[in-house]
Each structure stands twice: as structure tokens, then as C-alpha cells.
Amino acid sequence: MPTITSADGARLEVTSTGSGPGLVVVPGGLRRSHRCRRLAESLGDSRTVHVIERHGPGDSGPPPAGSSIEREVEDALAVLDATGSAELFGHGYGGLAALHVALRRDLRRLVIHEPAAGLDGAPDPASRPGLERGGPHGRTATAMATFLTGLGFAPVGVVPMPALTAFAWFLLRTPDGRQTRQLQPTAAPEVRAAVGPDPDGHRYAAVTSPTLIIAGGRDPEWQHRMQPRLAALIPHARYALVPEPDHHAPGGSAPAAVADLVRAFLTTDDATAR
Image 1 (tube, rainbow, N blue to C red):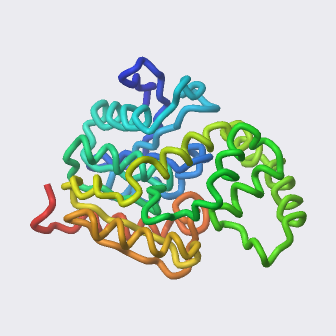
Image 2: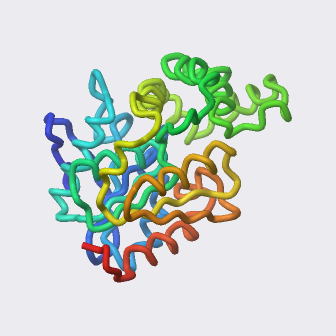
């Protein structure tokens, strides 16, 4: 598909696959669009899946100055409009962007996998300074280890920090890790957006779209508290816990399992579907 222009004139690269009604996918933080390829292919039998390449490396160009959740929302809206899609999937920070899209537009269906919406003190407030410091200096292994432990995605207290730092050093030098280093400056503003001015999440009660919230059983405890709370706030939301996968299921560990849940939700008629 040719590139799409967002409301502020920014260029967006979109990769499309499959056939059927359009589903737009917003990848998570520190993730390129190719990480959603297997998810998109798994859904291609029932949907035309349009995966956004978020700003950074690639044809979408660099993150614009003053990047914010509103820019992510404008990007998603531009792709929804250009493709004629009425369904949206977001993962992590992309899930937070998808939630904010649904505050502005009534979608036929919304699916969010562990959206980065900080509710009820999650993640731990004590970890937030370290998470934000991991942004501008995040090309180092120490910053990456701090970022992962602050979110609870690394077993702090079980594995010594020097070992985690060494592991992060190795990861940052793989092909995917080099892309992560390029995207790491976006981490700090994304953390600030996730733990923004609405810690109780009451704004999300205004989401009227039928919504599926997915979480993995191998995630940090704060995720298991936050996602059901979010589902309770949204009037037409369902919560699905998949026992085995972790936070990276859509883009790595279990894309087929996530696709099965998404397909069932998108293709089942009910009174709340529009």
C-alpha cells in the first residue's frame, strides 16, 4: 500500500495483508511493524489487516518533535480513514493509543492486548523515574535493564542486575535489538503518557465500542490487576486471560493464540456490534 499522510502531514508506512473487512493494527512500544507479521497473516483469512509502522526507522520517518499520544491517535485515525476500516487492534502503548482513538470515534470493534494504561498505581510509582531515565539514554544495556525491571518484565531480585545488564547488552546487539536502540528515545514520553493525569481511568468509561481486552498469564502481577479493572470501566468490554503467553504474545511468543481470540471476537455477531 502507498504511504498514508497523517493529519500533521507526517508520512506513514502501512503493510496490508489478507482479505475482508479492514482491521488496523498499532504495534507496541519499541516495536517495528514486522513484529506483527505473523499475527496479521493469522488473521488474513477473515480480515484485511493494515499494520502501521510507527514513527522511527522505516518509511514512516522519524518521530516528530513533541511526540505524544495525540499524534499516535491522529496516525491511527488517518489509516482507518484511508483504508475504510472500522476495527482497531493495539498492543501495549499501541493499545493505549487505540483506547484514545475509541474516545474520539465509535468503532465496530476494539481489541487491545495489555494496553499501557496506568491505573490504580500501576506500574509501581517507585519504578517510574528509572523508566523515564531509560528513554533518552536507553541505547545502553544498563538503561534497558532498568526499563525491563521497572515494568516487571525481568525477574528483579531473582537474577542479579549485572546479569540482567549483560543479557540486555546481548539483546541490543541482535538485529531486533539494534532497532530497539533506535526506537528507545520514544520510551520516556510513552511512560509519561501511560501514567498521565487520569490514574483512576474514569475517562475510559466513555468508550462505547465493543471491546476485547487480552492479557497473558505470564505477565507481571500489576498487569493482572490493571486489565480487569480497565474492562470493568468500559461499558461493553470483555476480558480474556490467556494462561501461557507473556506481554510479547502478539509480536513474538504466541501470535496464533492471540489471533484466535481476536478472530472469534471480530466475527461473532452480538447485540453490541456496530
